[in-house]
Image (cartoon, rainbow over all chains, first blue to last red):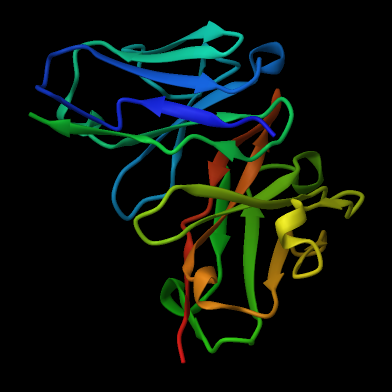
Length: 108
Length: 122
């Protein structure tokens, strides 16, 4: 089973800044099968990125995903107030439900 | 638009240890048999945990070993509904339970239900 690690655990930034969130896999991820989700308090997760770099429907282009193999990155350029939330990565090449522990993005 | 609406009185269920809970997920806005449907849960203040998946067309299911024998997913194409039943509840099963559709290009989770809080308490 692939284990995902996310870094940092908490990221403190100001609106307008750039956020870089990392997700590492214990083994190589098959065919870029890596997704990112955003979750706000009291809400269900929201799909942002699938296939490591494809934006889901309706996701603003300030969100971008990159990476391959074991190292993946979610970048948010020009943070908006509504972007402060918890972000999870998920590997779905081997086991559909392997999630990372999450990165909390908080307002500085 | 795709919608997944979960059952549970006002989105909550309270059960005693050893009991069972059933949560329903009613799908609309797409062809029900075209997408696998997954269940994910989140304990209070914790991360996300995958529970299992069902193919509504074939009713074939897949569960991680942790939940085999205790979790049952069923589908009803006449009502576009998937039911999740979890037996032998313990305090560790206290969580928000979500249903979610599988994506078109793989087993990521594209659309989510609103969540149902299941509280196990004596």
